[in-house]
Length: 550
Image (cartoon, rainbow, N blue to C red; front, side, top):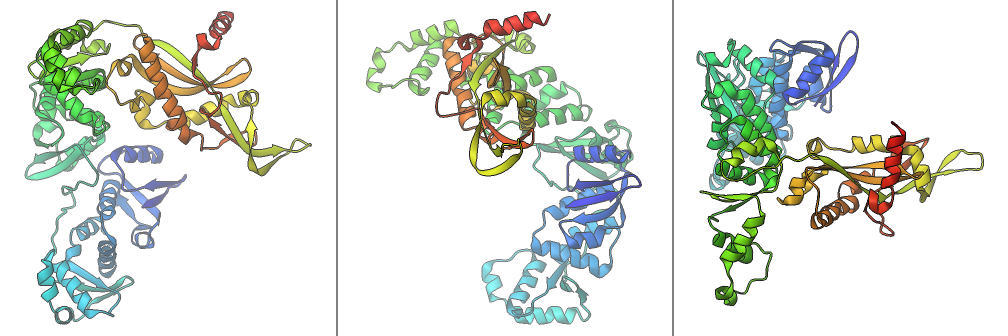
């Protein structure tokens, strides 16, 4: 739901439920401290008239309001109706009582249509029982059960949402007004239970620093050393926990665990097993080593169960899929020789878990990898630009007087005119980027663990004016120079993003330029190419421009 908060100076819209980071920003906007005592006055609620009638014009604790919204966010239509009917019938305004209502909707039934008493009775019975077999439900006399409910409710509550009936389930005070019950509203990487004096608070990885400080406030503690801390996570392995805690109690490392879990949560389904296998093989001794691994997991290949040159040669020839293998030729193949040849030119090592191949250049891994026989050579990062033609269209034309008017057909915008809009297009490219692209740009979507993934630290699309024409540019940050095969492979990857990936989405977004809207594409079916500055013949030109600016 969207709530509107009206203060003396301004009106602010805010969406709940939300994570703590958004609450931090709201408190900053409102100029109030984000602690367990933060309160707000709700001016109105959008999207739900029932919520508006219940909450508007009242002052609530911000954390309690957000917890209530999380509970309501999980409700189906029937549960929501029951909640609002109970709140209306009791004229509930206390936020603690409202939260408790969300844990007790199974104590009530709301009926607005009495045309089928058999179905109503069975629905009431199912609500009270929580779950029954279909056989037992089918045998139930729904009408008779409904009559019994009527007898037990001589004065049912009449609400705008229907008639509210109470069943025999006991209403429980799950929330005590000070300590939020365990509730996993969103996907998380694990739960931290912090206990003190018989009370508990729950944090869900990854969490913000302010969530930990609030939990301690609710518990009346100044630090985690005063509390009992338990961690439950099916994602963070024993090796990960050991690396982060480094022999210290878990409560001393909660923030580091949360920071790591945030990085871990951003990994894909294919990437998480890769990282887990790396941690298992390398057994990072410190949190610094662990973070270096998660930053560079894409630079490794792991061959579990491979412990010799012969094992490696056999895997590469038979199992890797790189060759067409005929088992009738096995006695003629020297697997050990082929494996030894590859090992001679690779930067890898055998461990008790298998063979690890490292393609990268992360010096933060150097000490740990040297212990198993992998040497990391320092490299100077460098930039490579690949240029491509742009295609742009608009649906605006210009009359004889220079006035713009809209048409129903595409009009091409030529590169010379596009150069006038370079600033606007660059801003549109920046706005089109996603948070997950922050670290590696579009290399985020490169899905092979090979030398290309290791050498290309990141790449992004941009535009530059070359000889008066605006061109598309893929700017690559390299850890090391690319060989011909690697250059061909990264060009193929960028071409895919230009034609069907990132750029396909970008070209569908209008860009406002000098009174009209244009659509810019990095791809065109005819006369399209991708060239380096040398291939394009502008290397000397760019050097002259740079020298001239000194």
